[in-house]
Amino acid sequence: MSTMRLLAGRTLSAGPEGFAEHAARLGPLPHAGRDLTEVVVRSGLTGRGGAGFAAGLKWRAAAARHAQALVVNGAEGEPHSKKDRLLMSTRPHLVLDGALLAARAVRVKEIVLYIGEHHTIARAAMEHALAERPGAERKHFRIAAAPARYVSGDSSAAVHLVTTGIALPTSAPAAPAMVQNVETLAHVALIARFGEDTGTVLVTMAGGVARPGVLEVETTATIADAIALAGGATEPPRAVLLGGYFGAWVEIGQAQGLTLDPVALRARGLSLGCGVVGVLPGSHCPVCETAGIMRYLAGESSAQCGPCFFGLRALAEASGRIANQGSNSEDLQRLQRWAAEVRGRGACKHPDGAVMFLQSALSTFGQEFASHQAHRARRTA
View 1 (cartoon, rainbow, N blue to C red):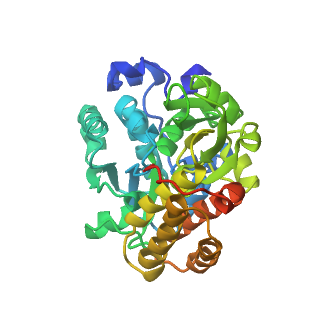
View 2 (cartoon, rainbow, N blue to C red):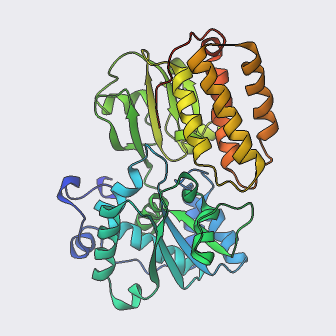
C-alpha cells in the first residue's frame, strides 16, 4: 500500500525523484487509452484543485466536446497552500505520467503545464523532468507561467491565459480545454497502475500548529488526526478554516471529527477545496482574521464587474470598520445584505467564493461580530 502514496519514495528533502528512480519504483508508463476514463470514474477520484468535481466525469465531458488541450494546473495562488508545488518539486514524473495518461484518454495533443510564476523550484523540477522523458512524450508539452494572483488559479483563467495570454477568470471557457490540478493527475498515475484510488489527500496545515506544512493523510483521517500529525495545536483552537480563502470556518468542536474525505465533506455542505486546513488559535481574534482575508480577496479582484470590484471592496471596508472600530448594527446589516446581493452576480466565481467565506464567518463567529471591541485588525493575508 505504501507504493500507492503520492509522496512514497525518497525523502522529500532529497529533491525531485529522477525518471530512472521513478520508473524503477513504479514501473513504466502504463499503456492506457480511452478505457482509463471509466477506471477513473469507478475509482471515485475527485479534483484536488478546489471544485472537487468527479475527475472521470470531467474527462467524459471533455472528450464529448472534443477538448483541444489539457491544462495541468499548478498555479497554486492560494496564500497558504503548498501541496502542489511540493508535489511538482519532489515527484514531477507522477504529474507528467498523469498528464500523458489523461491526454491520451481524452485524445488531446497539447499539454500545458501552468505553473505559478514565483514557484521557481517547482518549475525547475518540472523542466528537468520533462528533459528526462522520451522525445515522443516531450513534444506534447509546453510550459506557461501563471501570474502571481489569486484569481489566476481559477480553471477558466488558466484556459484564458493559454488561449489569449491573459489570465482572467471568465464565466464561460475561452476554448475547449480540460483543466486538472497537479495532485489529481498524480493520483491518476497511480490509479492507472493499481486500478483504484490511493485513498489519500494532500493537505497543507497552516496557522496554530507546531509544524505547519504539507501532509499526506488517508481520507479516513479526521481533522483532529491531521492536527496531531502536524505536532498538535500550539494553543487551544477556536475554529478551523477548511479549504482556504474560498473555504469555510468551522467551530473546533465540529471540525475535529470531520474526515478529510472530499465526498463526505461535500455531503455536509463543506469542501476540502485546495486542501488547506487553517487552525485558528483561541487567542486570535476571528473578526480581525476575517477582515484581513476579506481585504486580501477584495485586492485580488479581477475588476471585470461591479459585484467583484465594488461589492467586495464595500464588504472588506465594512468588515474592517468592525475590526478597527468595534461592532455596530449598521455594518452588520450591510454585511448580510451586501453579501446576498453580490453572490451569483459576478462575471466569474471570485465574488461568490469571497462571499461564501464571509457568510461562514458571520455564522461561526456571530457572537464575536455582534460584540467586537475596537482594536486594530491583524493582517492575515
